[in-house]
Amino acid sequence: MDCDEEMVKTLFQYQHGFVISKVLFTACELGVFDLLLESKELLTSAVIAERLGTSHMGMQRMLEVCVGLKLLKMERKDNKGLYGNTDFANLCLAKSSPKSQYQYIKFLSEFGYSNIQYLTKAVREGNNQNQTVFGTSEKDLYKNLSRSEEEWQRFSSAMDDAWSLFGQEVISAFDLSCLHVVCDLGGGSGYFAKIYASLYPNSTVTIFDLPEVVERGKKHFVSSEEHQITFQSGDFLNDPIPEADLYILCRILHCLDDEKCVALLTKLHKACKPGGGVLVVEQLLNEDRSGPLSASLYSLLMLVFLEGKERTASEYNALLHGAGFKDVQFKKRRYFGVVYGRK
Image (cartoon, rainbow, N blue to C red; front, side, top):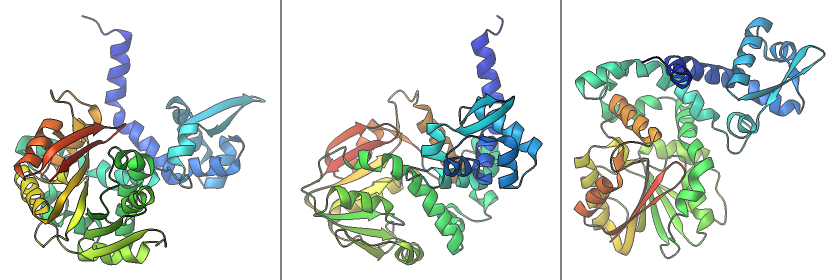
């Protein structure tokens, strides 16, 4: 059997995927998309190179690849290429966009790109590689990712980027208007809590996170008079949990193995007020584990860096029922799945 055209395209894309990622990372880091958004006009490669302080030859070649990747558009005038952002670049790649994914892209470039080299070792051994990456255990992963104020801000901003795109749709997946006392476990900076409070202004939201995270979160949190949001220090795996009507777990359970998930959910069930519940936001695998690709990839990343995994709806159903929650419902949104279990 010979490779047809589609096979050749697929082979090239997969062989060179790491180069494509690095082109995206580099263009973001150099400020290409920011410059083109701010300029409000198409620019030549020479002008872009001059303003960003790069070589003309290097910038021109990278811009040509960005056009091929549909990150940029190009028009020819007087035998010169003029470059501008696509709508996608303006929305997702320019730092000034309210929907920007720049911080997450930067995190992938600085942390994920270099450490994915340990994937082969993780697959062979079947466990995470934090001892190799950090010289420490998995439980100290977040401490290592936020050792300084700058590192914490970078990691926090990277995690928050997803909510600028998907936060409102996952919170509105279910009608939660009757649940007024809310606890966001591992809520970090409070970005998700703000979106929740804007949709349900009669609610009070407590962000429950590690002491060092709370300390930094308070420092950077911009409060609003109409939103009742507070911070409380604690380790939700080991410390008592505040009583609430609703507990939010955004990208928390995929970090944990099944045993820790059941232990945490059981603790939440005991602390939860009657009629209350838990809202879980995670990537959801298809029941036959055939995808979606985003969930399968993240499950593999969990193998490299943490002890958890992405799960199917049935697996989350079993975890929540095992902890005592009933009437477990599921909603799939564009990127994340939302699981709601009631007490």
